[in-house]
Amino acid sequence: MADGDDAYVYDEATGEWRPAGDVAAPATIDRGEVRDSAGNVLADGDSVTLIKDLKVKGANQTLKQGTIIRSIRLTDNDEEIDCRYDAIKGLVLRTEFVRKR
Image (cartoon, rainbow, N blue to C red; front, side):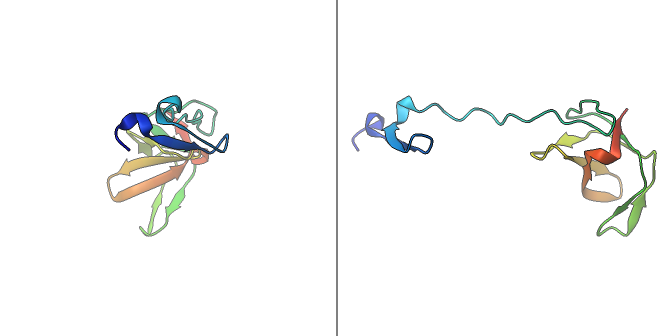
């Protein structure tokens, strides 16, 4: 191939080889709305409250109902959020157990 104009990309949708310029770049990941147990929409940086006591696997600790978790991060899974908590690193909670503050 002499230059970029000769590049081809296999389009899985059509099953054909197409010029790279004709194939659109994949769009950004479109996440669905992430909702808490009450149906409120969650966003990165929100604070949430636990609605139930939760045993944390691997930490031998229980997070009590009413515990406030600050600065959540959304994940690729609409049913899970990444959280920071003082004593637990890498905490992931299911959205069914939290309520937006």
